[in-house]
Image (cartoon, rainbow, N blue to C red; front, side, top):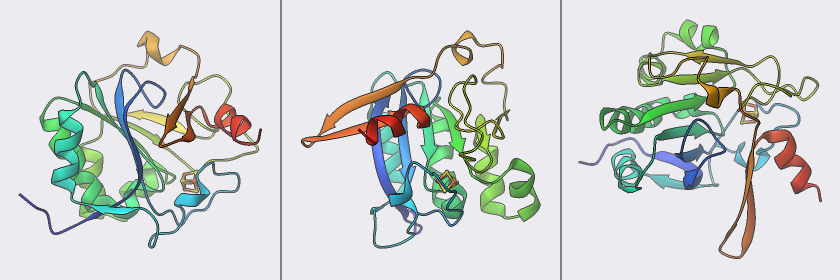
Length: 197
Ligand code: SF4
């Protein structure tokens, strides 16, 4: 089944352990109007011309075909600026048993105040939400998977608990060669330091 809505995707990694608990498919969506100073993905600001258009059902099928995954992490770019398509992907993979983690530059209160049915649907299909702008003056040094200390991890379902030992482990970065190019993902400060070398 093809959805009418298309999702503009910046990048994907089929299997990473640096973007949330367990082995996860990481999906970076294209487009973010927040433009936080120091954002580690400025190439994902533009909402058009960059990235590739993908069908949410086909993308979900690709995620579900990857073996051994615990979940999907959606990063950006800003997932709620393509809320309808992202919500479709999250609904489908979660219905098949994967967990869903979403990074948004908006706070949970801001998202709820929008009263946008697609944003509400996205939150309904999210287990873990990391919220808030990236503040480069307040780098997060202790909590795993967060970029700056103003950001909050919200447990929106019973799928995860804050006392899960994996949430206390040190942050990680991953380096891989893709089509002859070095890609870096994971903890923003460390990934940024690698990029500047
Ligand atoms: S919200 Fe995220 S993707 Fe958007 S500018 Fe801020 S850090 Fe970058």
